[in-house]
Length: 437
Ligand code: ADP
Ligand code: MG
Image (cartoon, rainbow, N blue to C red; front, side, top):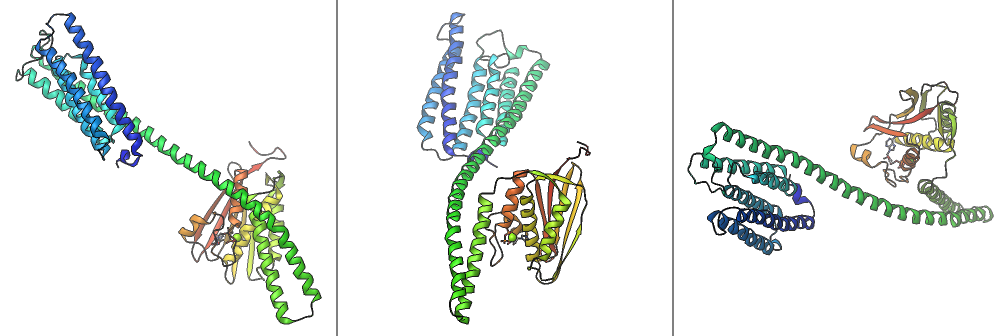
């Protein structure tokens, strides 16, 4: 995958500008200092090797001006960088050729080209560049070794043909290995940097979104709070009217509808406030089995099931956790309610509580109701996600919020038409000092 193309192009263009600027700067400095050194030495200022160096500097300047002119017009920046880097490898080869290929101090320039290639190009392209560098180096040294091109070294005594063949081969192999090693290593590092940066961008976006959500949530919570009082007055007034007004079955039916809907609205508002502004928790050590049994018993008495649902429970006593009992009840209640609502006709809800290594306390709530599709599973914790005609979609969001505040875990397994299992995991505490820590 071409990573560079996915990223915003502006940053890439900046990088290209830097490359072009540094190329001019360093080639002027490097080649300029070489010329100064040589002029101070032996050959006259207009000797052929020096003229070639002047030409090279001029060439790099002209190329850079061309690049600068093209930069704003070129659409495919990666390709542009590719071409520039390929031309750079040729420039380095010419520099090596002028400064005496094999013994030249400038062979490190290949590595420099490979390093910035790894910053600008995907890994495969960098490997290609490393190969191109190796091949060019090999060809120049070989041609000089076999005397097919006349050495252009500034110092006549450093001729390749004067070296033993095994040293030539050794130097070529070392250079090639270095090229590939640097290509892999710096590509790897650049890739790492790119990944980290992408992740950072993603997280920044996430944080912004969360901040915005929090602001909207605060607003909605304020609104919900304001709705509570007028709603209570409304249903209170209707109730009084209902008692006072002369009995008329039609009117009574209408008033019942008003009351029922006001109830629903009020439970929505309350649930929403519970979700958006959970009451400050008062943590205390609670014995899980008694709390669990209490809530389950209350639930069994609740009218929603009308005896159509059997509840079975397996409970292990003596497990303690630290949390607000109101929160625990809220969580269990929401899960049990969902389980009951998932069961159409007759069904079973199984509650299981057991210990796990950690030490953790786990509670499993299993139903054999309608179950969920994988698509549904992805959204169930989102506020207001519901598949029920009169659902609020807040039950599981509240559960999730509460558990998050305690750092507890919740997992779900579900299969359509077979049922669902919610598993809660709390960290155990040790009020009596008997548990291993
Ligand atoms: P609500 O119950 O108001 O719809 P919840 O947040 O409690 O909101 O649940 C969200 C959705 O998750 C439900 O509408 C339902 O589709 C699904 N769901 C939750 N628990 C179960 C369960 N035990 N079995 C099947 N579906 C479930
Ligand atoms: Mg629910």
